Image (cartoon, rainbow, N blue to C red; front, side):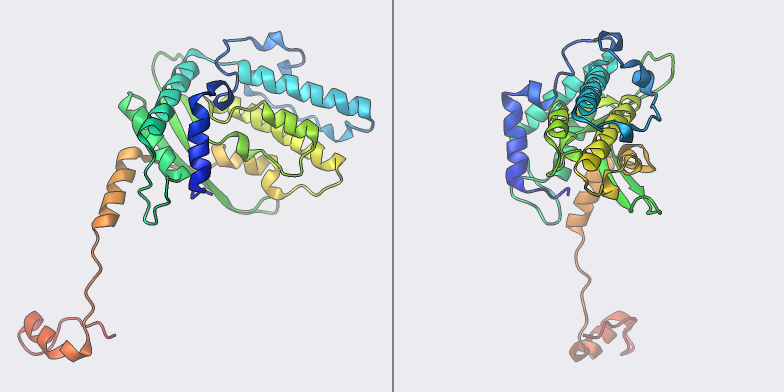
Length: 295
């Protein structure tokens, strides 16, 4: 997934130039209160409701009510933002603009023309660190069980410790957030809901948990109404594991150093039996090599 087609990467960056409102959604419209939206209290503060919406949708009126409620919950959750999130969101915008203006170069072992998603993450993380943020690349991994298959996912995370009475604040940066929830066979109602999401998500982990709950509930309803099987990779537990499971945090500096070392490693010479005597005399002086690789 990380080695995405380079054309898609360039479209992603080009679209950002004139459409920040599409890229980041309406997250910068202001610090709206969840009370501005009806029925949003059940998700306030990242709390999740355990209500099962399977019963909804028995008729068109109930279905319409369900989707309206999900849209209101989604908007209320997205609109809630803090000064820390707003500050990091603006810094992320500037980092993406800088990457676009200078061009994205792929530094992978098998570089892709125009760059790849993994290199884009590295470039953005590096610029955020230069701007003074403790930004790292997180790689989450989870094992399979009877409910979901194993998987892994990479994203960016910033830990902010400035002026918070509650301690450190973890802010997730997902550069392709909307794509994580898109379904080719989704209903019109589901696609409209997904269309509200920003392309780039920048927000606290608690807010992300609420968004995942809303979107996975909608996906479950969509699949049930269409009488289709819901893949395990669409389930709530699988989506939660992407950003809230066990993860390995790698600093940008370490990632860059490892990349350079990989480039500088020279292949080990292989010794042919035709040169056995020569190498043996050079290595031990007694006609026998210390170690010989037979080809």
